[in-house]
Image (cartoon, rainbow, N blue to C red; front, side, top):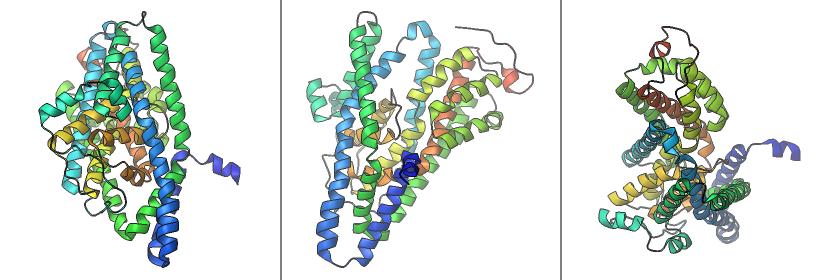
Amino acid sequence: MLSRLKSISLGNKILIGMVLGMIVGLILNFYVTDSFIKDIVLMDNVFYLGGNLFIKLMKMLVVPLVFFSIVVGVASISDLRTIGSIGGTTILIYLITTAIAVTIALAIGIFIQPGAELDMNGIAGTTNVTVNQTMTDTILNIVPDNPFSSLASGDMLPVIIFGLLIGIILAKLREKTEATNKIFTEGNTIMMEMTSIVMKFAPIGVFCLMAKTFGSLGFEGLLPLAKYIVCVLIGLAIQAFIVYPSLLVIFTRLNPIKFFKRFISVMFFAFSSSTSNATIPLNIEKLSEMGVSRDVSSFTIPLGATINMDGTAIMQGVAVMFAAQAYGIDLGTSALLTVIFTAVMASIGTAGVPSVGLVTLTMVFNSVGLPVQAIGIIFGIDHLIDMFRTAVNVTGDAICTIIVSFRNKAVDVDIFKGNKPPKEEKHIM
């Protein structure tokens, strides 16, 4: 029995915890009439303690993990002088598509309002929310007066900017700062391992959060969760089948239908594996069959698996609107722009550990002061849409690679169109 339990993946354990928590919460809501047992012993002590302890552990990880990841990520991809225009163009396209993705997600969240029917104010308190700051104040607040104070207080935008600057300088002074670079690399490794350890408690934390939520709300909490899933899936579909094909047509004039017919097997593999990293070899091989130079794809595809997280950005954008609506918070324009910027920056150097999207989502929530307690609810169903997110991520990597290759004359258009078989490649780098 114990060996079978160990063989269950973390995502499935979280899903089991979510379902059990919903069942226990609904039973408490409808069938437990003793207020002492329901409210004092379980709702306000056991489940409250378990759920909020997990949330605090996640909040503990956010600042150091994001800081080290940003520094290491930028330091590792900033050697653009040797990579030339390919590196700069690739990074720019990846960041632009991520910004488009989170913008689409926010628009869908505003239109459908998945959290509007969920009243979370009685379950957890709010924090200081960025609502109506002027754009001038928002821009000025990005630059830290004291970076160590920002690190201590968890003020995420200054932390990101400080990390970006350090990463750029480490990349520029690569040989002179090897020891410092090693410290940040090892620090990033430590934080990823700590994240893996904390995530082992995620099923228990999700169970407690779901039990407390549905014990308070009953069936009223089911419809908002369903609407949240629908919003994310709509955003992913728009990104995959409207945004990406449009970019392909605009920049290359190539037929996106031909691309999808030949790339569908890679999408299915990504969907089934739920990991972009495992799809890298297959993605490169399939692009090679389409006439894309391996000299380009062997750089852009691994890079995309690290910094191009459009599917995750869509989830984060919808989650922000879900939480804001559930707590009755009307986010201002500056707050929405802050979410876009933070979500894009969070995609750089994202740690390659299971469910790290929850950590970066905590970072996005913190950037505008949204209560992170809402994350525990949507995190329980995250595994259901993780497969779709991964398929979108790898599709975006491939489309961006074709665009970059086309601009650098590193793709054989006749092979892409199916007019002739693949030939031996000519190295360009």
